[in-house]
Image 1 (cartoon, helix red, strand yellow):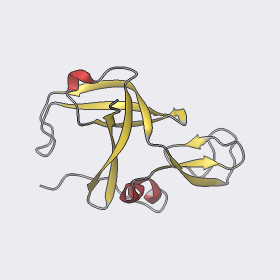
Image 2 (cartoon, one colour):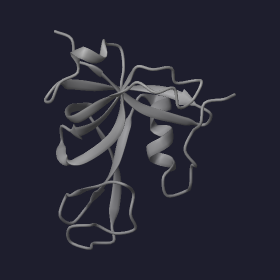
Image 3 (cartoon, rainbow, N blue to C red):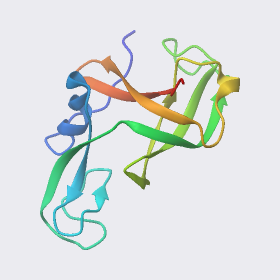
Image 4 (cartoon, one colour):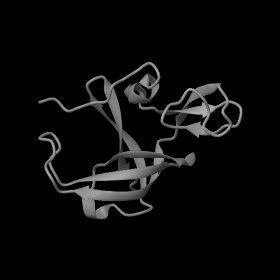
Length: 133
């Protein structure tokens, strides 16, 4: 069984395929500079209609997390960490993701993480790993 992946539409392709070049991308309003996620046709802050696609650093902070212990899908054996991370450039932009490359017990509130992309089908999923000194 293949791992599931998100539907890629013309409106979301920049987000789901940016990982092929190692880039985490979001929309940003050209008028008020607010980052917009998930992708929208207009700015959620000023209702401006001119949104640009910009790369961000890929750095984030764990806002909250849980450790899944149930085998919901054969390609995702437990335990694994499901987290909400806040993007460094815009902490109000949050992604639900998995934390990888560490013991689940290492994940804490405020943990600095960096994006790591995992290809699933045509999509590059933004997962996050702890920043190591």
